Amino acid sequence: MEDQSTAMRRLKQEQRITELSNTKSKNIDTASIPEIIDILHACEEEIFSGWQNYQTLFCKDFVEKLSEVSKHATDFIKDSSDNAIILSGCGTSGRLAFFISTKMNSLLQERGFPECFDYIIAGGKRALTHSVEAFEDSPAAGQDELIKVSEGKKKVLFIGISCGLSAPFIAGQLHYCMSHLETFLPVLLGFNTLHMVSDKAIEGWDQSLLSVTERLKLLEKNGQGYIFNPIVGPEAITGSSRMKGGGATKLILETCFLTALSQLGQSSQEKDEKMNTDNPSADDSFKPEEMITSLFECYKQVWETSYQYSKDQLSKLLEQAGKTLLASGHVYYLGWDTWGVLGMIDASECPPTFGSDFDDIRGFMKGGLMSRASSPQTVNAARSLDPPEDETSLKFFNASVLPSITANDSVVFLLPLNNERIDDDLKTLLPSVIEKTQQVGIISTSSLDKTQLAIEGYTLVLLGKLYKETMKDLDPKWKKVLDDRLDSSLWSAVLKSVNEFAVKSALNAISTGAHIAKGKVYQNYMVDLRLSNSKLLDRGIGIVSRCAGCSKEIARDAVMRAIYMTDDITSFRETPVSSIIQTAGNVERVVPVAIVLAITECTIKEALDHQKRVPIIRTLILNLL
Image 1 (cartoon, one colour):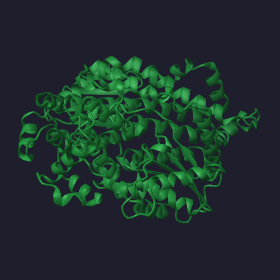
Image 2 (cartoon, one colour):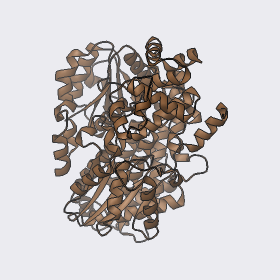
Image 3 (cartoon, helix red, strand yellow):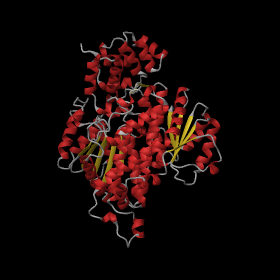
Image 4 (tube, helix red, strand yellow):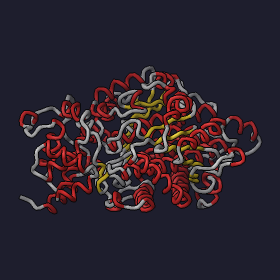
């Protein structure tokens, strides 16, 4: 029988990079709040610097590949009446597909082009605000959704997002694309190397994730498909791809499409204003690779500045949010424009990641989610949301949530103000909230005019200097590339996008820090995740194995006992994965209970008693070992 250290080395070798424990964050659960922010910063830095010796964002091969897809996107946008650019994902990836597609459609409208972006999220409209993880395992469901959304289109640029290259839902869509290359140009985006893709049989399908990616790799040789797989390293919270994976997805796709738009020339208004001047965007010598690298540098610059300027005040918000969850209170994000959407995305990710309740952290935004739906497809999606659209709006918050707020609750306002007039909704909501609770924060890009607000009592987090000032510090080489290519409309879009990247990072820090305070993290493992799809089931087994220092076989048995609440799992050994997941998705605290079972030789009843007496996992494990 192998010793524990040998078993741990073997397990590590078997894990995909996106499922590995990041050595920089192994003690994040015992760190102070400022230390938590530093740890998250150090882990996120790998988005730009890369991890070990793997391909990074700035590698020539990756930049050239992204450049090729941006050129295709330009062609699709030029003839958008018959074409579509469809982004698809599961969970966070699907929400970002919605976020980016609706934002790009809005930008196309501003520049006088017809909308051509659309999105797919596994689980449908409800998954925009709720955890609907099980659909990720269905290739057939993915294919059906793609057929529906692409109906009537002659050409489709399809980008499937799967941070771990592990979603059968996306594999089913890519397989369909590759069977209809006369219509589809398939692209896969993820953050593992291809040799880490699973070759396991997928229930009810004759393909595997590996067979799909290998076929796509062959098509890539002649430009019939593409695989984007830069390596951004393990997550700060192991496997939580909502963090670095989500951030990298956002900046990669936005960079691709902003580069595509830059090749279409200036907006119609600026063309009229500059008819007698040379238009640099008509320069045939333009190299998209330079634009892409410049945009990556732009994201990096603003991200670094935001940490430098916001750390002290952001620490206060983390402390407030942690106290709130420990006191069984609620954290509410109240946001405007795209910042509001990011708040809702961050909140929706907490139940599957930390096993939290839907109302523990919840997001609202001005106008509700409907305000972000611009195309007929997305309008119908937002109208069909469950809960209804108005339950995501500030109006609903004011009428139905505000009256029940107590001193234990925290409220964080997300304000992309940029020195503009303070919104009337803010003037009304802020004093009303402060009357209820002193745990109030504001995240903004600029100081607020207190003569307009005439109120104190909140923590203001400034995400760095004003972004136009930050851009002055950008390397002149990269700034010149952007200045030569971007009219004022696209510059605004770039500043908005990099601004959002910093906001997403701050929100991830708040929700992660709050759940660490509540004991939902052991070392850097999320030990109370819901095992609601095959990826999360495998992740849960891996977490039990590492925390208990046991083999995968022992860990799996412990997980099965915790799922079925029995000491005898003989009758469940041949149960299909789909059935296990269906049961597991409705059982709370599966992983913590399974850790106890794997460490001790106790019964399921005794394990439940142990976990109930000592809910903080690190303390519980130390007591048992």
